[in-house]
Image 1: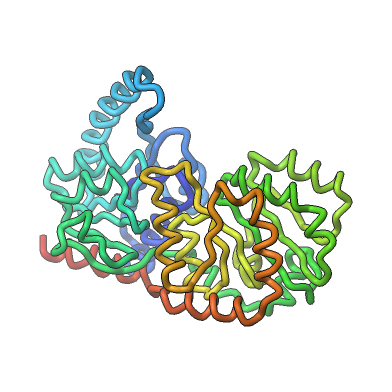
Image 2: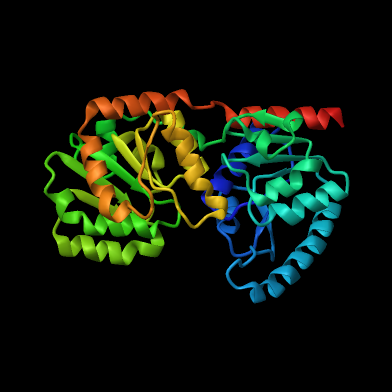
Length: 363
């Protein structure tokens, strides 16, 4: 059983783990448990797996009165989790973070089902911290996680990433053509996460003329479906021709291969992909995440000379200048690319499933 989700940063690692289990054990029964109405309810079935949704949601820290409903949903989710465990009888429950993993993994631990946690970030999430004491193993992507978890349970595995990203055989020129861009221009890829990023998009809108006036540079701009219309209208009104805007990029292998520089939020999965691919990156951490963990993720790279960070508050004034200057500096992008690649932890899904096997065999 694999539980969690909410964002691509939880879902893609979960699917990578499941895919590795299925590769080793084609007859394995795999069930996902997610949160109703969240992204996993669409992405997991599309990947060929069954999923059950729990009516669980996050606590509202701004309006405490709304949390009566949250508590009621949590109680209902705990009851459903009992039934799911009774019906499915998993050999192991794997939690990847996100709303659903809390009640599902807690109930699994109560019933004596072994549990493995996968923590993507450099600053542990609340759910995984609460589950850690009774977990059999905690797979992490950063060193120093004994601040949050029992040291004897920690295994440094890295974050699983989508396998197709690592298997792209196209040249940068071919990839740019596949993305509908000029094959020879310096290329900046802008990705704000699976749902988009308002601050990054607004900064690009404000800087469209500056981008248009920069010779030999082009931008592939994933705006997220939530921001598609205003970004598309702003681009059309500007008349700028060297920016290629789209709400969502399905062929991310080509998009990464096309890029000389990436501008991204600092989610753990995105960072792991950039490390494995050795892509120079400007990180703009989202301030709208628990414990400001994206800033901590970004600083882990900045301290190693493996990324440039522009804060969310400074993006409007500084992001476009920084990215245009950086992409044209081959020496700087070369150093960033080498340093970020040195931080990569490879074969994470394989390492995590190795731990799954050890736990099941011990039982």
